[in-house]
Length: 621
Image 1 (spheres, helix red, strand yellow):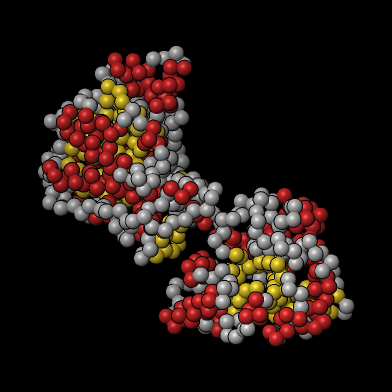
Image 2 (image 1 turned 90 degrees about the vertical axis):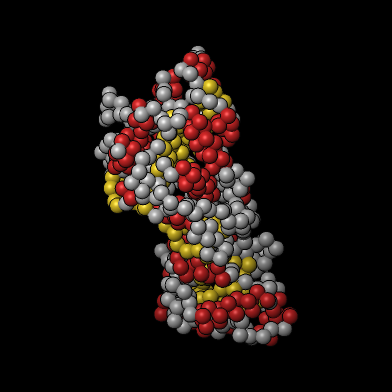
């Protein structure tokens, strides 16, 4: 078993490496089922062992009564560290330059315990004491500070903020460790510390940092709030008796945090550094002049955030100082999106219900269970009223949420079948990414471009000119499939505005436009940028609604993704800390925001099919 554990540790993929913003210190490590290995596997860069010199041996244990001859310091720590270090080419973790700190707490008298520890470690000079090797920090019964320099230079010591040190003594302090209750007697790791306690903790951290030393608090609370608090305050080491829990919290840190104006993402993290914003995004406050009025509805704009649950909305709102245009809408509802054949819906079933008002099945695109009946979408309904219609997606135009408004299939991945609907479609504007579909059709020997032109469509690959082309238009612009950046944040809003202008010009009887904001379910920080991009398009819809008084705006989602949970943050800095509880869709309800004539009909809780049905009812009357 011991050999197996060593091999496992040496070969373990380090997905956590270099992504933790703190050093995890595994306290009381020897009390675990697999001492050293559990902490090592979680990339704890500091590991603590309590050591006694007892009956001629260095033994590991908290109390004398716990000591067992087989639990030697050599067997439990020194031997596995040496073998791992050498097996990994003189480093502790494959592919990482991170060094391990071995903290040795002297439980028995300083002497001869410390001398015996040094004698043992000196047998492995390539591992302990070498410039790139494992560092040693002595705690517990440390020698008096006046005697720090009596021992080899590669031996460091635990410091104390209450002490004073000469420059020579401070040079030998490896880190500062203090009992947390000296500064905060009451805080249990939940909520906020009292101001006096917070001030005391901040002063301790500041003093350690003024010495140029990292700091660790032992005897401190653990948990998500405690971890985040210590990180935010600047504690360099997080003391933990739960290395797996703490490591999970701090792992993949760049994808759990967003900070307005200062977001930094480590190399290799999804989204990279482009997904930052230097400043908050302006929002639009509606006039409310015709909101909720009982009057004729000429136009309807339906905006769908793919994967947009309430917490996705709030993550962006908190990052933006609690400001979003959609949150200024007064008529708010909640929709369920459970399909007929499952508890959790997908974009196909959720989108189909929004498009048709009919009960749906997972993976189905606006059709019945076996695909034999094609359900009419809102685009068909409005076209029959003589109004112009448009489908705009900031993503793949043949993906489910957009395709439900012009196509039909029992399988959402049947993109060849879905794009063939362009050859017979009556939708006036189809706009999104997807130039590859025409290229693929050519390779398959089909001249699809000629077919869609024969159906009366113009074709462009530039979404910025949609308002300059009259009549039916298909726009496949692959820029719409890219992640939002600060430079492109307003792209969807510009296209939304241009699409409204085009459809208004194309039909004097009014229009129906659906706009999909995508990639909100890609995880932080991308989700915040995508949500803010989507909100800018909501603002354009609200501005138009205010300009004519005959437009209903409905904002909702096809489903929620990830079970996003907001854990903490900071309004002043626009910092949001959030984690995902799933890598898939969830059954979490999603919001509905409605503005304009008839908007109050959307207040309440209902199944997603009611949205399309309510729109039809309002427009008919």
